[in-house]
Amino acid sequence: MPSLDPETKHLAPPVTETLDDFSSLLQKELTARRVLVQAYAHGSVADANLDTGIRRVFSSTLHLTGQDRKRTEFTSLFGSSIAAMVRHALRKQLEVTKDLLRKLSALTVFPDSFKNEASTTLSPLVAAGDAAVEEQKQAEVACIATRLDVTAWKEEVNALRLSVYAQLLSIAR
Image (cartoon, rainbow, N blue to C red):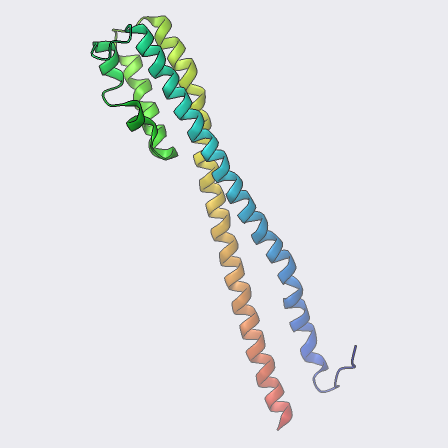
């Protein structure tokens, strides 16, 4: 390593310290991105599980009504096709599922065993979906905070660069 000029030797430590911060900041950003990808993967799994749960309740309702889609029991829960109910993204899918659970508990046309079975199928899936949405929110906030840290570091590096440049210019005169 070449020796430093005595006149510029005092400029090196702040630059070295600031650049040394980069590796930990980069690792923090990569970790935040990884957590975000994992959170969205958990959300996709929760969404697929909600779809499956709704399809199970749909099938159970069809079985209960003897495959008659015009009976009140069926139309009160499934006014539209099953495809229309399961094509939503996770947050909307949670709303659809919670609405389905509210209808189930409010309607008296269903036997208690059917209500219990449907509730047992859907309630844990809703809880997992809510947890996945919350995980996504937290991961997004962590990514934003990390981006702010990176921006602050870049501004610090830029200010340091300008300062060093100005000091070098004054030494060169």
